[in-house]
Length: 414
Image: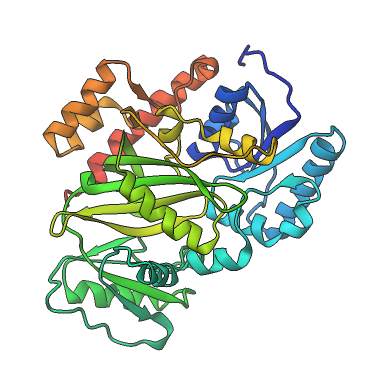
């Protein structure tokens, strides 16, 4: 067990989830405030289960809304009302975020809810509607054909696009529950036959919304960018941090998740996101995926996540602790002056050096990443000194070995 001393505060983070996203939140709050978070999840394995930096409540069946609300009501009464603390309720996954937002009226009697309202969520998490807002603001995104899945309509791919093309669900929430042969998070398709086969299989599932077929923006993983912004409770963007993705995961149901990032600077991209966020009245953290298009020199917006992303620790590792914005805004009611643009370079990676050396395809960027590692300017969210018990060291080693196996099995150069 960790022997670290904790500090009592008038607030406490309550985190839903048990993966690397949840652990990053636990670590971030501990780094900033030496606070011991409370994590509620439905698995007794993984990075949360063996952490000494949080109390862990195991609850079976949290995929059921009634069970989740019952568990949170109990936590709220025992940890918030009884102890007089502000509980900041955070979620590591889209399903949890949605349930928090949909049950805001009930949960707000115990918790601070640092998320947008339900109506706005239902608008912008649907990618076809998100792109509609981008059209209004003249912000770039990939050329897109919207497919109405239930209609059974054929899809005509514009001849000038050529192949490969990209296909992905407009509603990630609905797609989460769909089961069908060959399911992937995102498809890169090389022919009309592959597109037709995917749609035939998709239409056997429960998914009944729209699918997006998009022109492939050329370039490999190193053309990707990840952007994290914070909008205060008045809807003003007060912080932005841009990351240059060097490598993404390639496992079918995790395609597109960044696993190697170097913090970078491009204020114009942050200002474009700021225009969108303030136009719609966004509050809290937002996470954008973008890709640099070498054909016209623009960065194309792909999607928005209405929470901190899976690789959110790149922000904290780069010198801007994400937990502090939650606390400054919602616990202490601070007023923010202007926008803070994250500066400086730092390497974020939850894969081992071997994966970086072998699978980051751009040599100058690969050398830069290895140089940052050598200079001690790198961070692995799973590796945090106050929490490195022998058991956790063994877990981290196994995690890295598993990443090597995954890349050997699934990596495809694009």
